[in-house]
Amino acid sequence: MKRLVVLGLVMSLVLVGAPSLAAPFSGMFNDDDGNVHEPNIQAIAQEGITLGCGPSVYCPGRTIRRDEMASFLARALQLPMQTTGPFTDVGNNIHAGAINAIANAGVTLGCAPDRYCPAEPVRRDQMASFLARAFALAATPSPFTDTVGNVHEANIGAIAGAGITLGCAASQYCPTGLVRRDEMASFLARALDLEPVYVLLGMGSGLPLNCSKDGLHCTGAFTVPLRTFYGISEGFYQILPYMGDEQAQLQSTSTRFELTLNGFLQNLQPVTVESTGSVEKRFEGTIGLSRGGHQLIARWYWNGQLTQTTVLNLTVSG
Image (cartoon, rainbow, N blue to C red):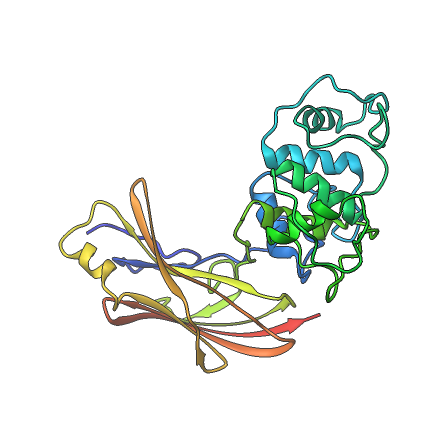
């Protein structure tokens, strides 16, 4: 019999089709917890579009400068860095290669003849033109009442038509407002059609759990910060090659992960992922948690048999 290890639990039991327990994931940055743009910040970070503003920080509330915008766009478009460009005020700026890259690609025209104004903040109307040029969006009439006569009006309409912006309020775009780093993450994620990346709420691995001797019944209590949504990704993994009827058992609809939140069964979708030497059957989705106390009950069923139960009492702070 093949030996499978239950992740995150110390067990002497040998299991076929072992539960796969996702470790709690705090995200790449520790200063965007609870930010409404956090899933998109994580999405562009996963794509290598942002490196943050310092070790483990993103600085979500800080406005974006024109030099930083160049690096965001160059990475998003996968443009090679350029050593030469048309601007005389770039010099040894750390973003010079990206500024030259987006200039040579026609994404920016600069702020004046031969100048890029790298340290200036980016306004929302300027951001629209950056994105419209970067993603070759067709000029479109603007749906916003506060952009009439703005030199960037057609590009504002273009990014609105592409679903990149919803404006700042009903029928308003706030064209002269400054673009924050958290907002920019959502603009870019929508432009690139990236899936939001939600912080995972692990059901077992890495959490302080009290488990029965065989490891099949666990309880725990912990606190998490307030977020719009948490991601769930739990299920089973199987070491390959299959033996006997293991493949049929793994693929069976009776092999499933169930999660109840405060007594209500959550809607999770099955996803099968195969890699070298193993295959995972995960159940994924998102859950919303308000401030205060909640109870999560996670159950793993292998081929219809309940194999593990974890009861988590959690408090949402913030």
